[in-house]
Image 1 (cartoon, helix red, strand yellow):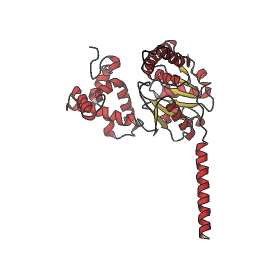
Image 2 (cartoon, one colour):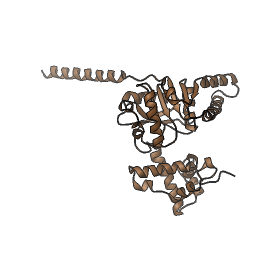
Image 3 (cartoon, helix red, strand yellow):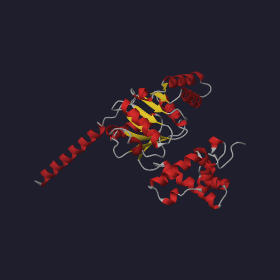
Image 4 (tube, helix red, strand yellow):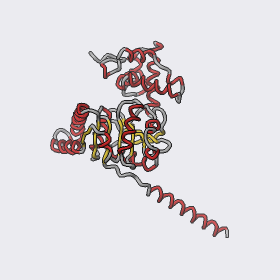
Length: 324
C-alpha cells in the first residue's frame, strides 16, 4: 500500500512539474517587429539606431522636423563609426551595406499617435518631467492597439507613476527599458517590472533588449532602479567631500580611478551626466522620501554650480572647465 501510494504521489508530482514546464514554455510572447521611439535626442536616436541595426522597423518621433533631422544626423554618424569598427577600413562594401540596411529600417514622423497606431513596442525617451510624460502616454494610449507594449527610458521617475495616465489594461503592458548613454556602446538595459506588469510582457522586453545586443537585468520599480540607485549617491558623496573641503576635485577623481579602478572619477562622471540632471534626480528622491535621508542630502557645491549655469560638459563648464 505504501509503495503504491508513493508511486501515485511521484506520478502526480511529475505530472504537475510537466504541466508547469509546459505552461511556462507556452507563455505567449508578443512578436515585436515594429518599434516607435519618442524623442530624437541622444538617448532616443541611440535607441533607434540599435533597434534598426537589429533589423527592427523603427519610427523616430519628435515635435519638429529640425529635431528629427538632428537625430538622423546623430544616427548616421554613429552607424558609420560602428560599421567601420565592425568590418574594418579595408571592407568598404560591407560597411556601406550595413549602413544602408540599418538606415532603411528607419522612418521619421512628427505625429506620435499615427506612428504608434501600427507599432508593437513604444519606447519613450523625452524630457524627465512626469507631467509631460503622462500627457504623452495619455494621447498614445488612445491611439495604439490594445496589445502594444509601452515603455519609458526614464532613469529617475517611477514607471508606475508615468503609467497612471493610461488605462488599467495598458498598465499591465507598461514597463521600463532603461538604456545607458551612449546607447550604441553601452551593453546594459535595465528592464523594469511594475507590480502589475505581465510576465510575458517582461519576457518580450528582455528579448528585445537581447536582440539589440544588450544584456538585460531585471529590477523592480524602485527609485534609481539598480545602477543610479548605487551610482548617484556615490557621486553625491564626492560633492559632499568637496563641500567639507576634505579633498580637491582632481584628487577625488584620481583617487577613485587609481584606487578603485573606476574608468572615470565621480566628479568627472557628474560633469558627463549633467549637473542639472544630478540635482533633478537627488531633489526628486528627497521629495519622494523613499531613500535614506543621508543619501539625498543636498550639496552646496552642486547647487551653486547649477545656479550659475555650470552644468558640466554640455555647457562647457561644471566641476571642471572644458572651454580651454
